[in-house]
Length: 413
Image (cartoon, rainbow, N blue to C red):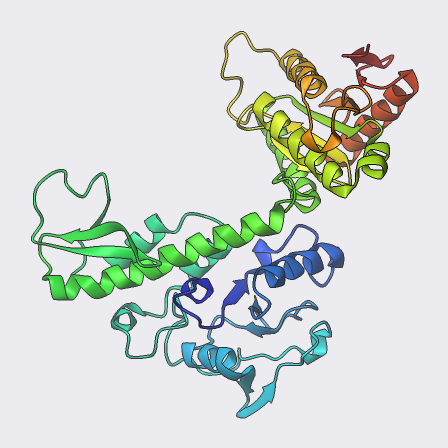
C-alpha cells in the first residue's frame, strides 16, 4: 500500500478501492472499460499488486479485482492474502484465480470476525510498535486516502482522540524549530526520510515514538496513492492528462462552473499533416512533435487549465479558473482566444531536431473552441460542438482554430 512499493520494502503492494473512488462510470453497472483501464494502469506500475474492492452489505464485486474486503476484515486476513494469495472464508481458504475478471470467482474475506483493525501499512509484522495505535476506527482514514484527500488532519484528529494524546501536534520542517521547546519530539519518516515531527508537552519520548511511526505509515500511503493516481491519469509519452482524466474532469468542472456561474471553454485540436511527418521522418520524430506540442502548450496556458491527450495526435484543453480570473481585466473567453493564438505562434516558430533541415514548412494545428454555457450545457454537447467547429475549421484551411457562430477563426494564414 505504501512502503511495499519502495525498493527498501519489497513486500507485495495492495490497493484497496472504495466504491466511491472508482473511475466515473466504473463498477458492475457502469462503463466497464473505465474500470478495466484503471486496474490495468495499477498493474502496469506493479505487476504484483493486489487490488481489493471494499464491499458493503454483500454487494457484488465488479470484475477485474483480485479480491474484496469488508469493513470488518482484520489485518491478519489481509496479510495472509498478500503472503500466498489465499483468503479464508467461512473457515476455508481458497486461492485467488490467476485470471481475474469473473465476479463470481473473486474471493472474499469480509465474513471473518475482526481481531484487529486494518493496518495503515501491511508489511510490518504484528509486533510493530505502530500496532499500539490500531483502534478499529481507521476505516475513515483509509477512505480518505483512497479518495485522494489529504490525510494529515484526519490522522491527527484520530491520534489526539486517544487517551493521553490530546496535546500532540505535528510540525513540518519549517515549524519544528519555532515556538517553545516541547518536552519530547519524535521524527515522522516517510520512505526513510524525515518529513516532520510529533511534539508533546506531556508525553515521554518513548510514548510518542510509536505514534510518529503510525503517522508516517499513513503519510507514506497517501504519497503512494497520489503517485498511483498520477500514473493512472497521465499520458506516459507527453506527460499530458490522458483520456480517462479528461472524461472524469470535464463533467465535474462544468458542474462546478454551473454552481458558481462561471464560463468554461474547451479547445480540441490536432496537428496538421501529422501522419505525413510520422511517415517521412519516423515515429521518433512523431513522438518529439507530440511531446514538444504539450510542452509549448503548458507554457501558454494558465495553472488551472488542463492539457489532455485524448487520441493519437488529438488534444483537448479545458480552460477553467475555479476561483475566477486572477487578473481583474481578464474576460472569458477573450483571454482564452489570446492563449490559443499565442500557442499557435509558439508552435509555428518551434524547430524539431528529428525533422532535420528539410522539414516541410512550419508545424501548425487546427481545432475548435466551444464555451459553456453558450455552446453546450454538458460535457457531451460541449465536446460535440468543439468537434464540429474543428471539422468546419479544417474545411477553411489548415492552421485554423474555429469558434462561435459562423465558424470564426483564429490564426489562419
